[in-house]
Image (cartoon, rainbow, N blue to C red; front, side):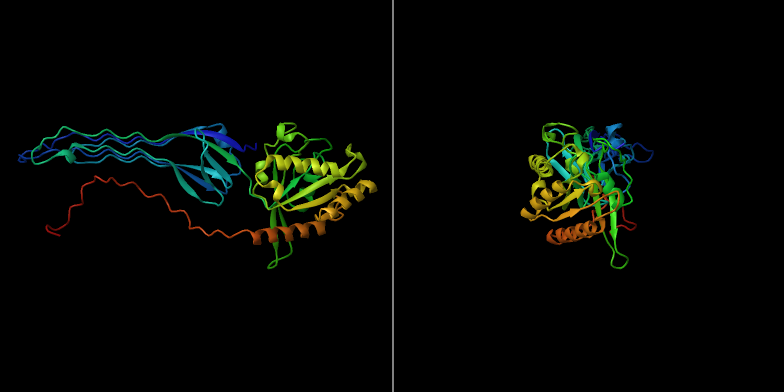
Length: 368
C-alpha cells in the first residue's frame, strides 16, 4: 500500500517531580535537605531512513508518546530521564506543523535527524532551596510537561525523471522496458493508481550512468479541479529534473489531436505550479507500432517549432528506446550540473540530557 500523506500527534515525556526529603541519620545532627531532582522527559526525534518508502505506518498508528522522567528520591538521588523516541520516515518526506501550516523540515537526504518535540525538564528537589537563613526548605518543583504537537507529513518521491501524459499512453510500459520496475500494465485507463519508481542504468563500469525514473498516474483535462485521479500525485515530480511527456499517436487512442493532448496536460502542470511548467521537457510519440502517420507528423512539427527534443518509440517492439534512454541521461546530467551543490554536515547525534542543577562530582581528594 502506497501512502504519501499522514497526520500524527506527538507528546514528549513529562519531567519528573523534584523530591522533598531530609537526611536523618544517627550521629549526623545536621543532615539538612536531601531531595533529588526529577528526571527529564524523553524527546521525540524524527529521522529519514532509506529502509522506508511509504508513510503507511503513520496512517494506522497516528499517536506517539515518549517516556516521562521518574521522580527524584531522597539522599540527593536524581530521577531517571525518559528514553527518547525516534520516528523513521522515508527520504523525501516534508514535515509541516498541522496547526499553523509552517514548514518544519524537508528530509532530502538519508539519516537526517531533528527533534520535533522536547521533553519536559525535571523539577528541582528541596536541596536547591537551602540558604543560610532557610536551612530546612520544604519547597520543591514539579516537572515541566513535555511538548505536544500535531504534524502533517507529505512524501515527495526523489526521482530524476518524471513520466507524464494521458492515461494508457504507455508510461508503465516504458518504465518496464527501461528499468527493472514491473508495474501493472493493462489496456484500460487508470491502470496505474500509484507512482512507480525504476532505476535506469546505461553503460558499464567505470563509465556507468544511472538515473531514477518515476511513472505518474495518468492526468486528464480538469485534473487540477479534481477530475480523474486529480493532481494528488503531482507532488512526486516536484523534485524531478526532467519531464518526459508521452503522447499517443496510434489510431486506437480515441483522441484525434496529439498536439491538443500535449497542450492539455501541459496546462494541468502549469495550474499545479511549483515550477513544473519550467522544467525541461522531452516529447515522446508513443505506440509507433500502430502509429497514424498524420498524428506523428503533426506532433513532430509542433515539437520542432517549440524547439523541444522529440523521439518516437514503441514499447512493444523496442523501437527508439535506446536513443531516448541516452537523451534522458544527457538531460539529467545537464540538469544536475546546473543545480548548485549543497554541502552540509552530517546531523549530530542527539546529546543526552544533563540536569543543570546536578551537584558537582566530589573529588577524590579535598582541595582538588
